[in-house]
Length: 200
Image (cartoon, rainbow, N blue to C red; front, top):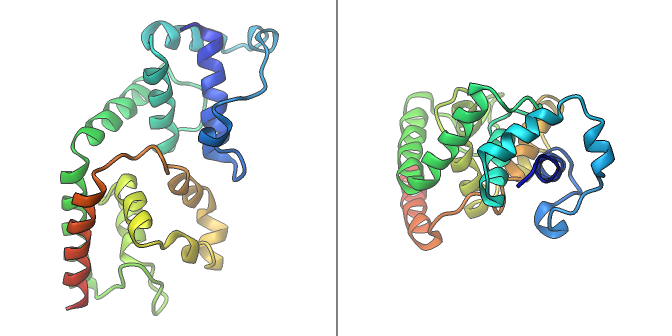
């Protein structure tokens, strides 16, 4: 791993998370970017430091994914926040099923007290999923999993106020496809039970 390679991974992950058309899985990470361009960057030392810290392709890719997933779009990735994002990303990956269960419990508790719809906009109220996510009560990973099991992001994107104020966040959630790994059969059973709870 060297700084230039880290920089190219950064470009690919940034394009993936910030543009509709670019998909890092379809493009296999192929991006424009020459070594001359890299050498002319004032911040190239950051990528050199990251290349020394994260020696494998997988590590550096996951580092960038974690930071874009958690809302850090800048290239200033040498600070504590960036490292904390990476550690949190790895921690959540290791316990994704339990996090999903805990988040579903938070959703149930919320709708019991607020009588808010889980997925839909009703009576000028944001859906419970959105309220809880904006309040840091459920994780972005849970939102992505739910959208894969019970799609809602597309309908949210049709809401004018959400489209105007939250388009970047909707894109961020959507672009996690392929990065959030989980046991589909186990998670589906848990989610089916959740759906039964909210329709009783």
